[in-house]
Image (cartoon, rainbow, N blue to C red):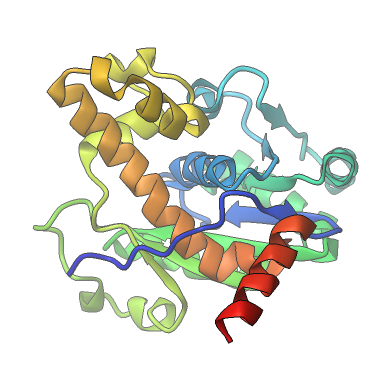
Length: 276
């Protein structure tokens, strides 16, 4: 069944305060970075400023996919450094009225485990005005457990499960006991995710010449007639993924922390009164 497309307003304002969204998992490789990249594209569709932060200076995928200068690397060698560096980003986000998209350290090895623990000890996330988590999982027992572990470790205010089935031959989520816990939470069904979309979102191989992911919808609209059929279909896949993700993320994560510009709010109220 094709997922329902929910329209997201094209001009949103972030409500006053510090708002952080993180892809949550204590396992490496479930799709945290691609979730951040997709979130950046969603924010661009909605006209929302964003700041992407990471604790991994070796993660070149984020900067390559989002554009040079759009990723801030933080230091979490100690809880004190984790708190101080994130506090500086929070201050900047408040000035720009921007969402903070944070790529949390994974737990691939002892070093990343320590970084993750230092971020937890800093307790900055819980002190923000809103703290939401998108949990990327596929039908894999370790990924499912990693998502649950992150939820319990940080106790976010809002949770959205990004349930990504790699292909139609992958096992069912229901065949894993850990899914019973996650299935009760709001879900973003990524069964439409394809290898092509992933390649574009992360800009590997032949797609390296495309613009940064947040600029893809505008790029497709302006260049549609000049692209060959394969390129049209490939970029359409990625843009359709962003549009579908935008609706679900707006419904479960963004709507409570955003508002329409005053002018549009008045026009919407006026139109509703006329219809009544």
